[in-house]
Image (cartoon, rainbow, N blue to C red; front, side, top):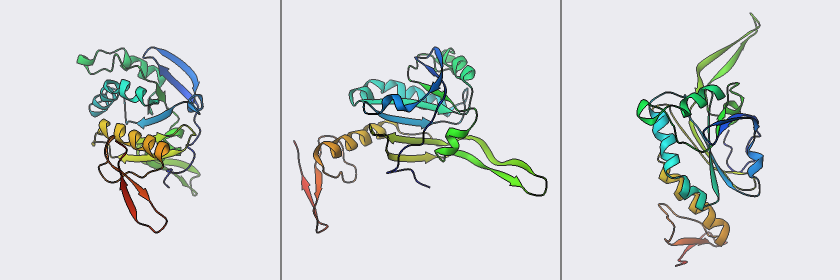
Length: 210
């Protein structure tokens, strides 16, 4: 079930912040009323596509910060594994230098609540036992959560498909534009281009705010 237009599921878990400190009970509630949040899930630490995405988010961190937006990563690895990866140099496949928080969803509850877990739990009535069908790690899910805690965008990529980080800057720009001007943003809209005013009769009128 899509989460767009709904409050983001609550979460509380261990996380590594500033690339070096493990904290307990990390929550997105600290950003309510203050920041937009991009929460992104990735499959596993110490892999191949994942560090390219994480470094790409880090490279654009300043651009997101200019837009009152924080980046938060999450995988089903433990805090200790996150910390070890954060202490591994980039040339050795690590993510040293990454500064945004990375949540440890070792229980897989957060991934399950956001609909990105790569499988499902099944209960066998005959044996009274649980099993897991699929792959018990997170797909590449990405969620834009506004300052009120409402999900405004979600996308989920399969494990081999890396994300385009620049697209999330465009989406944040569009969300900010909608909130500021009450206009809607057409296909391929970018900051500085014409937006649209949707009228009651269903006709959209182009409008430029340059």
